[in-house]
Length: 319
Image: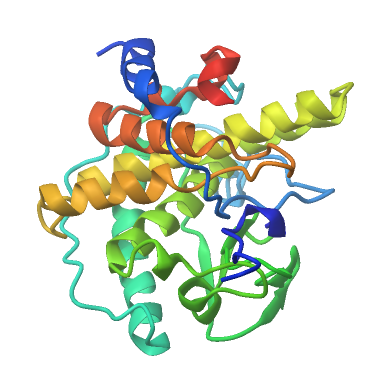
């Protein structure tokens, strides 16, 4: 995850469009703090394959042998604007008690992340398979300090952020960096010490896994390679990241009753996401803090996968 996504330490110290723009009217007054989250791009991101090993028959059928009737499924749409994931609907209400994990305690927050990841598996598996999309869970690599994965160091220099690596379909995170910061980047605990904010952050990374399973990541990567300017590449990155915010909002709403997420905590989540975003003077690859908050809230309020279609929105909604 690019280091510039982190909050920096001070040197001295209904319809989708209606849902988005009703909030954007007041969103742009939010102070830019900046933060880091997202997908770690790879020069060789894998293509989603429609053929899996289990699809091949174990032996050739014999003459006269009755063959089972194969269910015909329409091919998956892996495009950005009309992807099959948009037919998945809402995530099912999922039981996921949050408990009392201390975000500064490695063992506690690691166990919490892995526990709530199982909730994400259940919720997203049900939704994706309902839409005919094959599911497999991501892997999680949670370290106390520093580590290295196929997509690079975690945390990266001057970054506290976890990241999703498409190459291994894994999320990499440092609990110490997330809580306390790393280098010039302050920790997320500066904005919220409630474990629900960390669950939502991991919901964002899980959103990148959903994008990988559905072909959205591959489609975005192909568009990125074909882009003629840095501005176009950054715009594609913002749409990808803001969509993952929306997916995170969908998940947190699906577990709100059991986690629980009462009104005060819900408002904490909205404020947390509204404080994350692009720093002035750094590449605009994740979206403004107001738009980060808007898209998380979009997923929370609308609760439908098609309401997270950032690729169909005008540029100012994903700036």
